[in-house]
Amino acid sequence: MPELPEVEALAGYLRQRAVGRRVDRLEVAAISALKTYDPAPTEVTGRAVVDARRHGKFLDVVFEGDLHLVVHLARAGWLHYREAFPAGTPLRPGKGPIALRVRLDDGSGFDLTEAGTQKKLAAYLVSDVAAVPGVAKLGPDAFAADLPTFAERLRSRRGQVKGVLTDQSVLSGVGNAYSDEILHAAKLSPFAITDRLTDGQLAALHAATRQILGDAVERSVGQRAAELKGEKRSGLKVHARTGLPCPVCGDTVREVSFADSSLQYCPTCQTGGKPLADRRLSRIVR
Image (cartoon, rainbow, N blue to C red; front, top):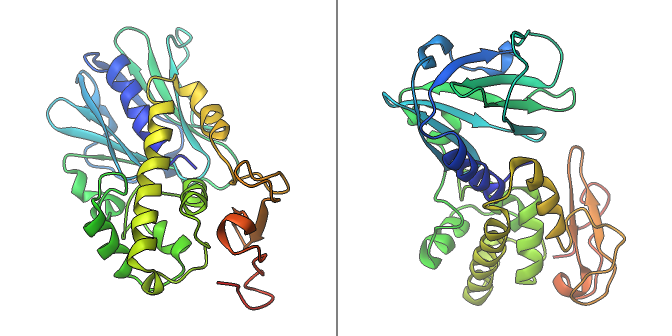
């Protein structure tokens, strides 16, 4: 799933490549992906791209006249920039991966795509970003929050720190992958309870969040959209590395699986050497 660093990089790439170009047309291939009907997609035609922004994990493409195409890429969505599209071949609705296509006046443009069968990519064409339900509910940006704000937000929601850190209404921008990396850097169990965290642990978690996201943004910004996924994988120390040695201590990276997700962690770095039990089967080691 694209998270804060990748969405920030995609916005930066669009600012470099698309800003100043006018829209030739917006084509919708997956009707279910476009969650709004007014303004109509034809309203974008002829408008210049004036900015690209990020709200949490939402990408916001801004057109002149204060019209916004706000996109949540979900788990398997992505943006593919094309320097040119085949001439005379309009996009046809169908079962392919392309959800929306934005064609620009220089012949370039971008596709919003989604792999797999679970089609959850969501696009909203709005004049007010606050009209997008997910954006309206976002908490403070995880990367921008200072320590007092960060600590107050985490303590406002009692629960396992992994889940609270990825709750977009608490702090926005962090998903499954970077939360694993942040907790590893902070030397915290993903099952630690937020209202039991000490001031020192919260400070370490805040510092790790800034470090992990900052390093990822630095690696990602300036990369072409097609290179971002590989760049993300190259920087991971525990996420998606089950069975491999932890690059910090050498212990084996472990995994806890859930119905539709999983987390990875290092026992030596995070849980005092004790493997975590699957919550569905036995007690959690905190």
